[in-house]
Length: 75
Image 1: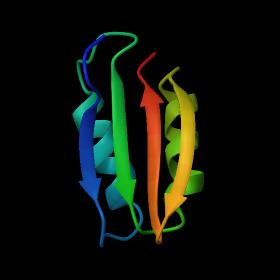
Image 2 (image 1 turned 60 degrees about the horizontal axis):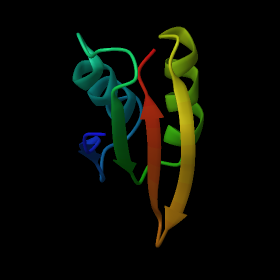
Image 3 (image 1 turned 90 degrees about the vertical axis):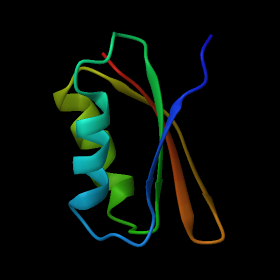
Image 4 (image 1 turned 60 degrees about the vertical axis):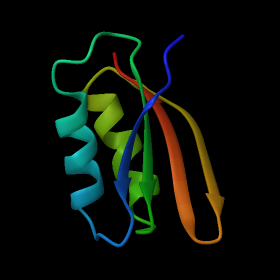
């Protein structure tokens, strides 16, 4: 399995983290994985909503030292 693509949106406010994730996922094959790094707590809500719209899924959400790490899979 290939390493997930990392999208670093730390320091940006909503909706930038989700928009960056959406742009990175454009044209991705089903099953491709991405890691979104964000400091905006709204990413915890926005990214799962985006994944539901794109028929993808959130695999995990972790928070360490104020940085959210969301592992998602393209649908």
